[in-house]
Length: 317
Image (cartoon, rainbow, N blue to C red):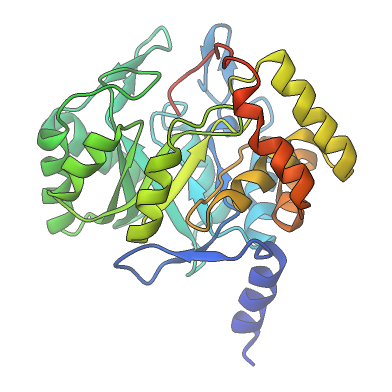
């Protein structure tokens, strides 16, 4: 066996205990345990996901270890930083492994005050695609998610036909291979699928925040990936206690249990936990192999009914 092929097989075996998923209409098979790069950017006072991280070399090490451990799905956006996260990804990983799938997002820009501003016009989307290409050092983007910005922090109804048509045209020009969606409603998913093939949907979803249960089932039947973010976001104290109790029973961390539950939830779910810490990265990756006994799974499934979901301090994912 050639060394490169052997190395790729070893990496896949290390990060693949949760299995893999092939994006529809593509040859991209990604391990279900991925990595979200948002936390690689820094912070400047109240401006979150802003500027360079305090430890750039540490960020490079996190990315390199993630890929060396078999992660082949990285989620990013050029408005993280802005530009910073993509530039770090390029510095850490370019030239990129053949099996690495980088998924980025467009339709937002950052204000000087760190705010998240809708940027859904044709001109803004075209600029965003070219900025992603430039900062990642790519000729074509594997997957571009259109993030609905009718509400910055949660899905809100509104037609996405115009911005999605603009992205579809960029796909026809060869700048994008596949298109996904983020922060969307089921109605927007249906609208989008009438315009262009959709390979993934990325929304806020976790043990306590399960409004997308029916959408996940619908997407699974169609072979479309669902990519949840904020695996611990919006928990009430009661729900946090229940998760901690489950983690104690499983000799695991609450984050590991939350990630393992998502992987158990449906075979089309791909997780993208983010961290700037090597220790937390290693802990997160172990969640792919965590088995949840039926009695613990039942307790976790009941969590969303225990109390009203707590408010969450959010920023655009």
